[in-house]
Amino acid sequence: CVYSDQGGYPSSRLGITASTAVNPTAGWQTIQLSTPIPVVSGQKVWLSWVFQIAPGIHYTAGTPGRAASSNTWANGMPASFGTSTIAPNKYSIYCTYSIGGAKSAEIFTSQIDPVNAKSDLKAYPNPFTEKLNIEFSSVNDTKATLEIYNLAGSRLEVLYDGPIIGGDLYTFEYFPRLTSSQIVVYRLTLGDKSYTGKVIYNERK
Image 1 (cartoon, rainbow, N blue to C red):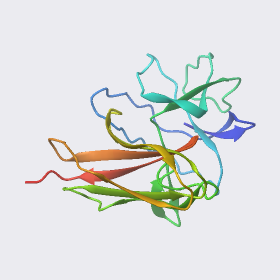
Image 2 (image 1 turned 90 degrees about the vertical axis):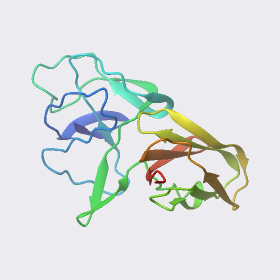
Image 3 (image 1 turned 60 degrees about the vertical axis):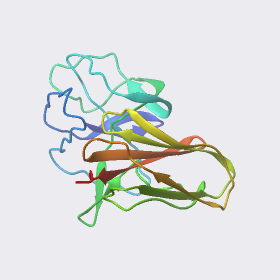
């Protein structure tokens, strides 16, 4: 379910999906909204779920965090989220959006905040086999961490973890040690902001 934001808390329901069983072996599961919802640039939304048995979902510490309600609902997600508490947890859940009918990248993918970054985060080629090139730059001096994950949320490699100089272009190479073709996730953290994207690894035949 998607909720609007009011003062940093989930508020009114914007859209909803059909009831879906969680498959613990499926990796990423994609669930469609029953009907599309319009959003505007910069709009904050909350992705929410209600469960019968608490699912195990990967998360990391950080903002904006998660909102949780102790209320119970017998008939799916309510029209208003109601009172909630915030904790500094970020879950591996995302939504996609479309511009002019064409699907965009994930909201949390390489859309770099212009305050903190000089150029877009880039990963190429996609698909890749031998190596993946990742490059980025930042306007300000800051600390950067560049990591590679699989779709299950397990970290495969840390390509960089240290200070960077504002205005400089940084390029790193990832040489996969994978045994099968799959989607991998790259994650860049600049200061207190994180950006992720997905690329396809094709195993050499």
